[in-house]
Amino acid sequence: MTGDSASAQRDERPHVVIVGAGFGGLTAARQLRKAPVRVTLIDRRNYHLFQPLLYQVATAGLSPADIAAPIRHIVRSQANTSVLLGRVQSVDTARKLLKVDDREVGYDYLILATGAKHAYPNPDWEAFAPGLKSVDDATSMRARILLAFEQAEQAEDPAEQRRCLNFVIVGGGPTGVELAGAIAELARRVIAKDFRRIDTTTSRVVLLEGGPRILPALPENLSAYATRALAKLGVEVRTGDFVEEVDETGVAVGGARIESRTVLWAAGVRASEAHRWLDAESDRAGRILVGPDLSVPDHPDIFAVGDTAHVPWKDGQPIPGVAPAAKQMGIYAAKAIMARVAGRKPEAFRYKHAGNLATIGRSSAVIDFGWWRPKGFLAWLLWGLAHVYFLIGFRNKIAVMADWIWAYITFKKGMRLITGGPHK
Ligand SMILES: Cc1cc2nc3c(=O)[nH]c(=O)nc-3n(C[C@H](O)[C@H](O)[C@H](O)COP(=O)(O)OP(=O)(O)OC[C@H]3O[C@@H](n4cnc5c(N)ncnc54)[C@H](O)[C@@H]3O)c2cc1C
Image: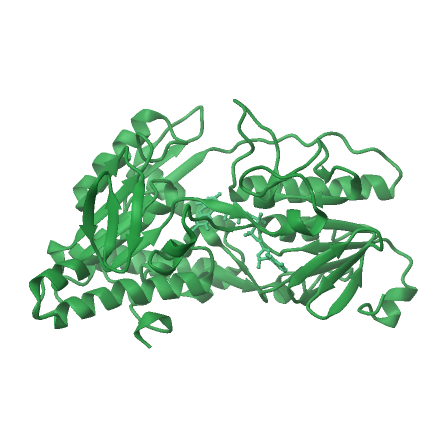
């Protein structure tokens, strides 16, 4: 083992390595804070990201620092935990070593919590229809959206101007719905008075969903409510046709073409590469098929949690790729390791589904708790409170609440900065 320090080598405690400080990995690390183990938390980024609010960064509602927190700061008071900034390349299961950039790190127990990334039916589409998974994606998406208005303002050709004022979002899950609502509000309310040559309120925002309805994980009445709420904001919802082509000037769908300079992708994800590191059996989305204790078959000391694990749930479906599921799995994997260290056999993992939700613009949302299905303003308030509550960091909670209250009262979104992105 070359990567561990000399003091770590003297440490007799079992070494738990967690790859990924997202919802699953970070929760596992916190759960292990008092355990008689040594924890190394590895991430390619130095911050934990609250992905559920990424769409607000992409639509100028929040700034990236509001929804991210440095990993070192989060675990600073956990004496048994070290943080390692680096990208895991591979796992040598025979020698129990991870390759992290150009160093090796040994482990006794390994938790893989490496999440997911965008998935496209045609990889060429990614260049024209960016997805939303990281801070860079969000700031680049924000640049694209704002730039489209700038280009429309300058366009001499009416067809090009129209193309710039058309926004297409592919995928009618929560992220697609949230993006569509926020872009429609941006165009119709927030920036309506900022331009001289164009009327941004004439922008067309189209949400495309290949299935029969948007928000398929929610009951039909909530999905119908969301469709009506989007229509009120000026979003056209088109269901039942899958996108056939995406290029620089728009999309082809249902045999017709929609001209647009801004096509955004919210139509599916694929698990991380972790299954390849282990040559483990995975489902079509690349999620590792784990056992009842979330360990990887033939590797009892390796656990996979969150978006990178396939855990059977109900109706033949796996547990959904949502933050509460990743957190529950993270807690469970940590407890399973503690049980093993204590010489006990862990009980099987059991998932408790908290519900599904999506927000539609600045004052409406739909929530399905199973036993209660609020919608409209009350659901939006609950959505907002839940997100602020689960955000990490006191500063972030205050900053997000202040931004939301300000935006609610004034209809202003202050983070309208074109940084990075395609204008360079
Ligand atoms: C735009 C968007 C909106 C969402 N909205 C919601 C929502 O409203 N509610 C909800 O419950 N869920 C939502 N989700 C889903 C939720 O964010 C995920 O289910 C959750 O983040 C999964 O947690 P995880 O720990 O598996 O992975 P992640 O939280 O994605 O964390 C994975 C971590 O692994 C690190 N990593 C990956 N590969 C490597 C490597 N090779 N080496 C080192 N580090 C690596 C990454 O940097 C990352 O920090 C949303 C997701 C997105 C993208």
